[in-house]
Image (cartoon, rainbow, N blue to C red):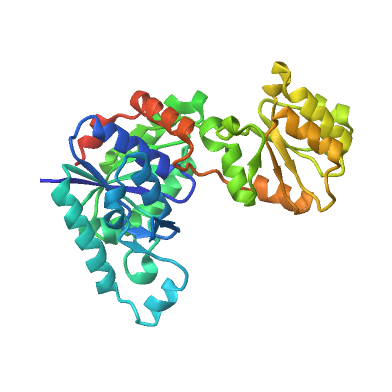
Length: 363
């Protein structure tokens, strides 16, 4: 009989996708047949001609389950979906049948099925199927992922638990993610003190890591919708700092930190030449990750030749410096299938920090 684990979360950006990757990796070490499903997909993309949820596409690619993709993402709420349900064009019963049918097929193929929820527990309410409803309908055991902290975790978990209690579903385990390293032991101890009497186990997941949280050059190229030029072997380099090249060249250089992305307008020839020249000096290559060159004015021919010859990774974009800076600083990095270094790190770390035995105990 197939075991089913529903991966819930208190909200966005607590690391649920990272946890799903980790649990899939760990489960495959213990079970011969492991499957994944994202019953309700609010963020869609094209996958070989099929519109599916982005997380389902990620899991299919990473774990070589592309042939199951239609089952892994049975219901996607794309543009206009909300109106179709509210207008009665689509019904809750139709959605239930889509999800249940896919889940049954996967259960027949698997010993363990990971079921990833969408956002916080209320997502899906517009069609009458929030996360708690889906977990109840599929008869899955539930673990909940929350971000780090103590009071904020208790508050967010309590708010989300209300829907699971209403649906008659018990959340068996709280997996705390993005923990401040120096506070790991005390944070988990206090959370155990609060949740254990309520029948909820508490375990720690990953400490907060800028390596996992920060974007790669490739991520930012996709975000800005412009190609990455220069050394393509650096596409997976992780950006830890973003700096505006607005000051004098010397001050910009003096302000460099480890793996800095410089935003330098196309008219700053001196600074562009300086950064390109420094890029191949080992001490500076550690600091200079690449350039974003905004502006409508063309880069001068000689400057462009120096940039190209240096191999420094760069993105050329016609937007203004302010538009680029706002887009980059507001961006929250999400793992993609191309982020091979991050994914390898996640899997390696998961083996050290996640107590999969505790998770199995609630199945």
